Length: 88
Length: 249
Image (cartoon, rainbow over all chains, first blue to last red; front, side, top):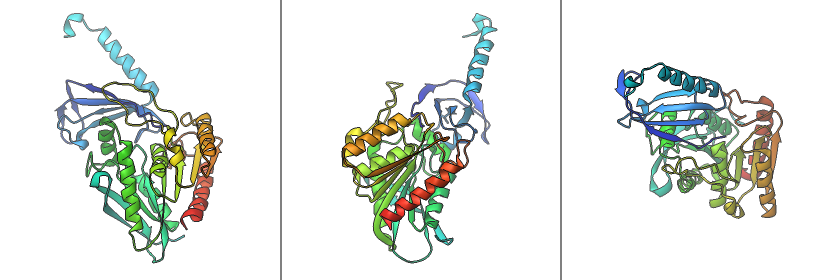
């Protein structure tokens, strides 16, 4: 089914992908729904939207549920090894 | 059936008088025939949807596939347009009805039209096909595993309210026969939800026929997806063909 559920978050940082090279981040959507390319019925999808609003400027991820959870765990482990004073 | 069809990118007048991009597929030969509005699924105005449009054209129908996201991202790749539309909350129901009305009007204005127009959709498009049939003068409707005709998804974020709801209250307005094709292993719509829709339509005296397929879950028509189930698809297309022939011929 289409979940219709979408989380919105404004991100700061940079990303690289596509012909434009590096660019800033901005409005990002996260949702669990049908993928376009991944061979699964549903995936955890992240669209790093183009700060300028250009539809083709998004950077898209489609992760299986297991991979998405592994990514979350990996991010948490990466933070866990960092001295707190660096996390500013 | 014909092997000779023509396709074109056209503009139609949709909800609010907006110019909406659409894909037209029709038999090359002359002669009066029915029309079909194909409502694309949530991933958008994609290659698969256009393949389905061409299939129904080879079956002898004028088929129009409006790009429901053409306002949000004109000219963008279908998946990018779908992402933009989703970020903005999706397609409002009233706008969908207006776009299908414009598509049906465009089909009826073709010199080949016999005056009859049906609507079909898959997944979110299945829900929208039923919604259109409750609000427009149509001759047949096909719902392929559309969720939330009855019931509604949970709210997840107060800042971004969902633009879809179940519309049980509109079912008494259903104005044409409805064919429903569902996967018995689908979670949404589940067999219980399909049974509830069946019960309501029966209560309201609405002509409908539902078929559920064992071994099929959601999205079983998707030829480019792992959910594809060939037995269900073959039987489903046969039933759609019979249904359209009865009501659009």
